[in-house]
Amino acid sequence: MNSRITDRIATGVFYTIAAIMVALLLYLFYFILSNGLPQVTWDFLTSPSSSYQAGGGIRDQLFNSLYILFITMIITVPLGVCGGIYMAEYAKPGKITNFIRTCIEMLASLPSIVVGLFGLLIFVNITGWGYTIIGGALALTIFNIPVMVRVTEDAIRSVPKEQKEASLALGITRWHTIKTVILPYAFPGILTGAILASGRVFGEAAALLYTAGLSTPTLDYGNWNPFAENSPLNIFRPAETLAVHIWSVNTQGLIPDVREVANGASAVLVIAVLVFNLLARWLGSVIHKKLTAGK
Amino acid sequence: MAKASVSPSAEERLILTKKNRRWDEVRGRSLVTICAVIMIAATIAVTVFLAQKGLQSFTVNNINPIAYLTSANWNPTGGENASFGIFPFIFGSLAVTFLSALIAAPLGIGAAIFMSEIAPKFGKKVLQPVIELLVGIPSVVYGFIGLVVLVPLLRDHFPGIGFSLFAGVIVLTVMILPTVTTIATDAMRSLPNSLRQGSLALGATRWQTIRKVLIPAALPSLLTAIVLGMARAFGEALAVQMVIGNTRDIPGSIFDTAGTLTTIVTLNIGHTTYGSIENNTLWSMGLILLIISFLFIFVVRYLSGRRKI
Image (cartoon, rainbow over the protein chains, first blue to last red):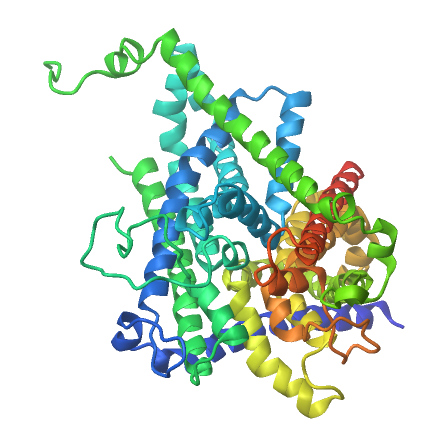
C-alpha cells in the first residue's frame, strides 16, 4: 500500500481515538449530572440518610467526607511536605535514598483495599477503637503520603538553582534557605498538588469501608464538644462517607430509592472533584503570578 | 534616601536573624529526616503486619498453601466439607487485569501519540484536561455507572445476566485508560526532537516515523505505562465488585459472572468473625494482593532500567 495512504489512515485512527476519549468524558459527565442534579436539592443535602425509607438525604455523609478529608490533610500535608523536602534537599544519592524511594513507590502502588485491610488490622482491631474517623484518616494518610511527597519534591526541584545557590552563598544555612527561599517559590506547586490530592481522598471508598465504617451514629450538630458521643466532631465515632454511601446503598441498601440517592450522591461527588480540580488550577496560576510578577 | 526603619533589610531578615543558626539547621534536618523514617516505617509496618496476619491461615489453621492457591473449590462455610481454594479468584483477577490492559493499551498509547505527534495544541488544551478529569472521577462512581448503564445493556444484548467478567473489564478499561495515557504521553513527549526530524528528513511519513522510530524508542516507557495501568486494574475493588457478579466459579465465557481477589475480600471481610478460619483465608488473599502489587513495582523498575533514551 502507498505509504501516503497508510499515513492518512493512521492519522484518521488517532483522531478517532482522541474523539472516543472526549466522547467518553462528555457522556460520563452528561450521565452523572443529568441524572444527579435534579436530585440535589437543599433538602437532599441537609436531611439525614434513611436506612429503609425513601427520601433520605446525605447530610451526615457529606459532613463526614469533608471532616475525614480535613483530618487526613492535617496529618498528611506536614508529613508529606517534610518528606518531600528531605528527598529533594537532604537525601544523598545512595542505598538509603534508593530504599526510601522504593518505599514511597510501594506505598503509592498499594491497592486501596489493601490499605483498608491494614487499617482494619491496626486501627480497628489491634488498637480496639472499632470503626472510627481517626482510623479512616490514618488509613487515608498511608494512601496519600506518597502523593504529597512526590508533589513537594517536584515543586522543590523546579526552583531555579541560582536562587538556592545565591542564598547559600550569602552564608544562610540550608534549613533557613529552604524556609525563606525555596518553600515560598515551591508553594504554588505544593498547594496545587495538595488540592488535587484532596479530590482523590474525597472520592476514596475502598480504604474507608472497614476503617471508618458503614454507619454514622445520630449526630447533633449543635453539640461541638469533640468528646461527646453524638458530636459530629468526635473523631472516635464511625463515619460513613459519601463515596462509601454510594457503594453501600447499591450493594446492601434496603431503601427503595437507591437510584435517586446514588445519582444525587454521585453528582455531588463529581462536582466536588471538579471544583477541587478547577480550584487547583486557578489558585496555582494566581499565586504564581503574584509571587513572580507582582510587587 | 533614609533607610526605611519599619521593614528590616534583606540582610537583617535573612542573614543576621537568630533563625539562621546551626541549631536551627540541626532541628530542621532532624524534622525532615524523621518524616522520611516514618515513610519507611509505614511501608515496613504494612508489609510485616499483613504478612503475619495473612500467613495465619497456613500456620494456625493448617491450610495447605499449594491447595489454597490451586484448588478451584471455594466453600468456606461448608462446615465439615469446607474447602478453601482461591484459584477462581486469582484467575478472575488476572483475567480482568489482562483483558482491560489489552483494550486500554492501544487506546491509551494512541491518545498519547495523538497528543504528542498529531495535534499537540488540541491535545494540551482539550485532551489533557479531559484525561485529568477522568482520573478524578471516583471509582465508586465508575462502578455505579457500570451497574446502572452497562449491566442492563449487556443483559439485553448478550448472553448471561449482565453481571459479568466483561462488564468488569469494560469498567476497568475506562478507569485505567487515563493512567496509561498520561504516562505514555510523558514518554512520547520526552523523546528528543532530533529523532523526529531525522526520520522525516529521510522522507519517512509521519506514521512511518511513529511506527519505526518513535514507538521503538519509547517502548520501555510505554510498557511501564501499561504495567502501571494493570497494577491499578488489579487492585481496584469496589467498581469491579459492583458489576462482576462475585461468584465462586471459574467463568466459562466472558459473559459469565466471576469473582476477583479484591471483590471477595471486600464483600466478606466485614461479615466474617475476626480470627475465624474463613476470615484468615481472606487475610491471606490480602497478602497475595500485596505481594502482586510489589511484583508490579519490580516489573516497572526492570523496565525503567531498560530505558534507552
